[in-house]
Image (cartoon, rainbow, N blue to C red; front, side, top):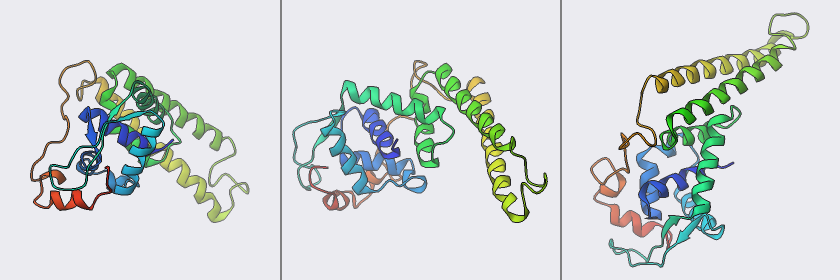
Length: 218
């Protein structure tokens, strides 16, 4: 499973129809580069690849209003919408995902109904608890010769990480059940498509030069 696929599909979905620079701007506004391996080249590659897979429909190229090369606009197909939801559900439910993939899913959790989001996070909790039980079945650091010296710290680190993850996930579930955020079917989202402005890449003075630097067709 790929975080970049989930991020790009989610960005196109939010815009309805978007070219590569808009997708890049959306992800940069969300800070995706700080917690994922998202880079401009990977965004354009993902758009082109998923168009080949018919998850995205590539509309005819149009001249860039910023004076750059012609660009292609992308829109989710029916298969793309199904893929997006499937990736989102799997990334939320599985405890053994990388932080970039779970972060990508968490950033789009409100695209699901509230009850479904809670159910998926509870599944993640169960996975964490089952994994912890399997690890502790062989003993824990300090239990004896089965966990000698500093090697026991490896298991200690795993358990500490799992416990922290479980506590955070439990808190998130409680916040969602308590009415936090606006989920699918509940009305206007609390944060929609990032708009142009001082804090958004497409609103900066050098937006045109940034777009010219992007690959043709993006």
